[in-house]
Image (cartoon, rainbow, N blue to C red; front, side, top):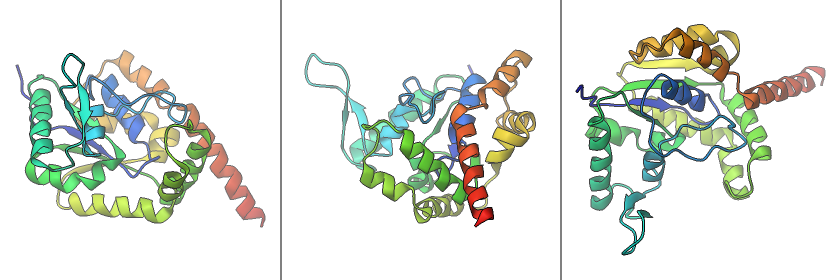
Length: 243
């Protein structure tokens, strides 16, 4: 059985197409996690985020629950000895699957230097890029549609700032310097050149999905919320042009 040492890492600042790319990889047979974050209205087809890595980026790992209960999340703190041991187990499990694997979480940017220094020598890195102002406007739509239990108003105000997005982008730029990276333009993937973008992603990831799956991928990238984003951005631009 082939052993895939390093993951396909999907990077992006948020609202830039990472969920679309992670979903395409999942459709192509990449192991993106056994348990993923819950699908919610802002991303109706899913986020395709491996819950183990999402929680890890928040300092949590799975551990045995109280006696006689199921596994529970513990909070040893990111990069603590207990946390690092838990992450080694997660990574070794994925490496033993004999299949391509990957993960996506916008918070990866805060740990990217750590992953690339201590764990992954030759990962395949896919960076979803979108104009930060467009990301910011998309976040406004996302904030309006978010369920009340998803994120607090205070956190929304923070993540919607262009400065916050720019700080995430700066972390990515610094960590990937000198590495081979596939950059995927949001507008090309979702609106202008879906097939070409999908073909480039599959080629870079060394995946060979069937023609049937490729057709399903073309349908998949037509996210309803992406169309809402586009219409909203166009309406804002009209207001700017007419003022």
